[in-house]
Length: 582
Ligand SMILES: [Fe+2]
Image (cartoon, helix red, strand yellow):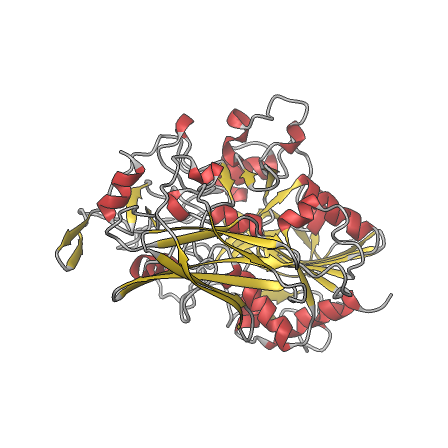
């Protein structure tokens, strides 16, 4: 079955069954067996659409994705840019494919008050078919429009909206890029580094990502190589008001089914199944709006800039990373470690520090073999195998994640999704209220904060820990830097247990196998039991002349979005301390 068959068979929401529990976020991959795309079954009848579902149909574990139909009779428009960041004065090249005759382009500086900065109309376009390997080689569409960024354009995130119209029908699609600070201007105190490698990893446009894929050779159920020259799936750049975040916000009754509100929403409203796993709309944007409301100036860069520019961090008092930031290169970590040792301060309000990746082709191709690294990564039998694209704790790499940011995903990871800690408070419990980060919060030992905003989840970073005198402390196994203090924590899980509640389907399932291997180096009943348990933490430590503060939860920004006073005050405390004059 070809991609077109799948796409046509199911219209926009194409589907293939991937088997129960086969799609997860942090570590698990599809089972080794090759995929057999199976059309979920959508049938057209004049004006009505029908989704015919077999007995026992399981939408949670069925892939559905957005892809071009490439049918001249069906109106569609797609776009991407040649890069994800530019300096003022550089050219943004916009690649477009559309079955419309012409498109308009609007460019908006996004934030608390979105500001249109450029518009172009009546640009001729045409349909360009996707190459079979578009997901790793790029879509290869020609440049439809080039925009030279004005020299005085402020650093920030700029959304591109491309629209086409035929008669009454219209379509639009959004993309985006960062504008770096002009080299000639004074720098802000803070450099905000966006998690664009995690955006790319989860972007399932066309049906391929580091989590999904079909018809791939060697039994791969995900694409180990991804190009940035693809459109972003719907919802990654712009999400609808009122759409859910990954953690469920309701308190579930005894014997309830597991809840996955994002999958329900995405299936119902036609968004990417992965749209809140990553991206500007869900993670970076809420922090930027908070910064603007608090008059906190930011300069902007991407992970690729961190990877490729050794001097990127020079001169900044603080580096900030937020949201879901899971995929890093060796070079990125070295840059952060060097910066901290030299007196830099890093504030990571983010979860899921997990995988080493590599970047090739000037950073346009991202490589992550993950759980297949030891049988398929081309570096596995070479002298460069420390750059194997596996988890950081892998003995071949031997650079535990906690060594850089104080926490690691392998001691996390899930909370408040499905039946991974479904009735946790959604907040952090405070253990060191005397720490400077809590100044002015009035939080006491044992207090719990952020629960109403569900700041704890959906993927969190933790440590191996023990308790002493009522306070958690990192163990030797944790690999946390000397002097790491655990300020607050809560519990996470890597195993969804089926209690037989009627109507249950499970999305995350049991991830204890690979976590056991990552933590303990062996998989047996005892290590799997231990690996099923995890934690998420807030830690702080000094190293060299610098400092690191890490609130290890992808949903920390939900506390800013929902104006949780504790999350806001702690965030302000960290940024103020990390930007003060030495
Ligand atoms: Fe993740």
